[in-house]
Image 1 (cartoon, rainbow, N blue to C red):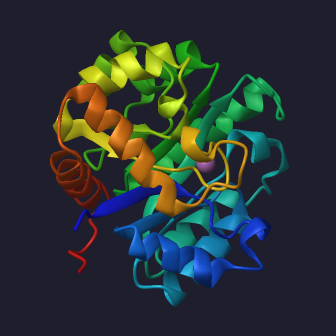
Image 2: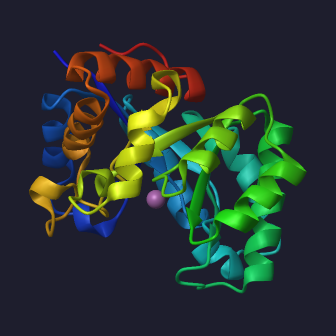
Length: 260
Ligand code: NI
């Protein structure tokens, strides 16, 4: 039996309202043993904690996404710090910069990103980084501010091999989602093929970024297998070997218990 961990999903999304139980059932049957549900604002962080309380195989990350940085209340850091103490919270995320949609002013995105990096260092928690069309500023901030010994993950990685190598040297894991399965995704495929097996994670980012075989439909954690199969093929490894490594990596990064 293949065991996989979906290291990044948003299962509190209203798209699962009608069939969340069935969707989770399909994930379990597909061998998904654990899932990290990632917050993007205070409300979704609270919903992630609720999911983690309800399902022993779901763990939560709490944080403010760059899209939502402009709307973060003044006391958001105190509230994240409080939430981080709740059962099942394993990371600060997702945090970072998004210059593709620019939904929050860039100076605000940068401030909120840096404040949350500092919070993660203070709490000794790993970080989950969102980077869209902001590679230069992300790396500048990470070089300047650094991450703590708890490390982190570059989620849905879209950068170059040079960037991946520098991130790994900083203590990051590199995670790939559905886009690595798209036929024209040359760079993600090249980078995924080269990333050290000991630094690799897989994710869905469900309900977004549905892998190729199901593209156009709603994504869900069961489909993380397509991501794992693609990377295994790119690396010339069996799915078993890839699954075992990425599952161990996710457990090491997030401090997850063994699951059966
Ligand atoms: Ni996400």
